[in-house]
Amino acid sequence: MNYQPIKKLLKQFKDDAITMDDFIRELSHINVEELEHTTLDHQRKARLGFPEVIFCQNKTPQQVADIAGAIAKQNYSFLATRASLAHFKAVKRYIKKAQYNTLGKTISFSAQTMHHKPHRLLIITAGTSDIPVAEEAKETALVMGLTVETIYDIGVAGIHRVFHNWDKIHEATIIIVIAGMEGALPSVIGGLAPCPVIAVPTSVGYGASFQGIAALLGMLNSCAPGISVVNIDNGFGAVYCAYRIIKNLPDTQ
Image (cartoon, rainbow, N blue to C red; front, side, top):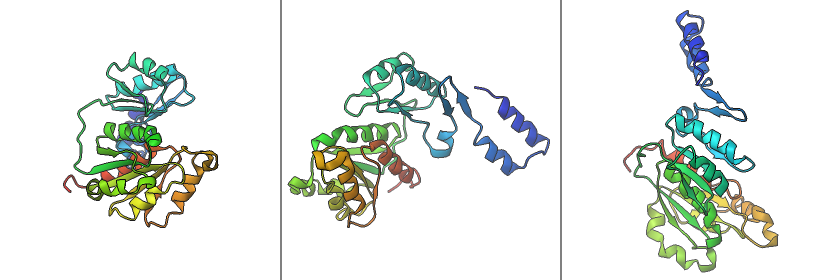
């Protein structure tokens, strides 16, 4: 890491050239690492609570491996989404303990034992076809240190399945509901559960689903109050939203 910008900033502060507030503000922007193809933001963990996450789509295996290696050197936990098996094989050369979720297409590595808060994140899918998005969400939650449970395939075509899982739904701190087709399940859960509900539309469905747009619009127009909606197939984004809520809650429920 290049320490010269930090040394320069410290000297400015020592010489009273900048105020304490200026020093703190500038320091929060200074911790970056420039690779040949990427500028890494090593301050993200300090600002947001979790290091930079790699979105692998359209990146070469070597680019992903280079980024993963740089993150690992900081002794940070590591997560990559939209990863192929080729990406994983390249990363394994740098991080031997990295793990690959085939369904969720994630690569993950926990640099230290995570402190799991008691608050429970529940991930629900409407159908089995939505599980890949749910697995991306689950792996994101685990590497972030969240306590997570999953319930798969309880969509509105068999609404009694929701009530069969009522205890888990009622006891959750936050629920992520993942659905394709017409995207109705978040409205059902949002009208029953007392906790925040984050809806994830998926690209699952026949032609008129428009690769998830129908589900997205249905969720945005839900009559159940207080539902938050993220982008199509974005299990990672849903969990990041939940994480930022949970990490600010006290450790006791």
